[in-house]
Length: 265
Image 1 (cartoon, rainbow, N blue to C red):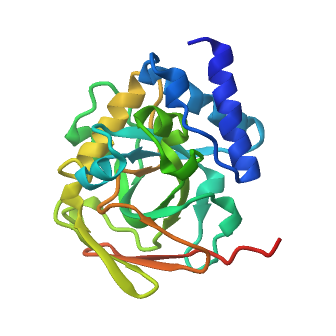
Image 2: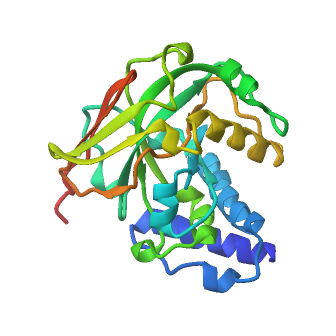
C-alpha cells in the first residue's frame, strides 16, 4: 500500500479524534493489505501526537482473552501505544467528550523497572523487568462507527486505545500469582462480570512476553517506567457519562473510574 493511502487513513482517524465523529471501517479499502500496513497507520498517528507534544508512556495488548476475541470476532492479539494524555487519575471525573463510544475493561498493569528488547524475550526476562504491578481499568474506544471492526481496523486505530486509570497500591510480582488473580467488575454498584488473570493468554506475563517480542521485531524497546496493559480479564462493557466503575482484584486491591457528565452543547 502506498504512503499516501497510509497517511490518508491516519488523517481520517485523527480527524475522528478531533471531531468526535466516527468513520467508516477501513477494511474494505485495505482488503489486500498486510497487518503491517495497519500498524503503519497507527504509527503515523502516534508520530503526529508526539509532534503535538504528547509522549509515549507505554503499550497495551488488545484482544488477549478468549472473551474479548469472541466479542470482537478476531483470533489474535494486537498492540497499541499509551500516551501521557490517556492516563487519568482515580476518583477524578474523566471528561466524557474525550471518547466516542467507550467501553471499560479490568486489567493488571505492569510497570517496568528494566528495558525489555525482543525478539528472544523469555518469561524469566519479563519477570526480572517488572518493577511492580497495579490494578487498572482501561477505557477502550473506537473511532470506527458502531464498533464495526475487524483486526485491520482495530490495529490501525491504535488497538482501540482510549484511556487508562491506574490504582495506587503497588504490589511486587513475587507477592501475587497473576494467573489466579480473581476480578469482579461493578458498574454503578451492579456486578457485571467476574474474571481471572489466567484468561489473558494463560497469564498476563505471557502477554508481556508476546508484546516485547512483537514490538522488538519493529525495533521498539519496552522502556523502564513504562506501563504495559496485558489485556482484559473480562469482556468489555459500554459506559456512559456519569457511570462509576470499580474493579476489585484479589491480591492487588481496587481501582475505580468515573466518567464525567457530558457538557451541554
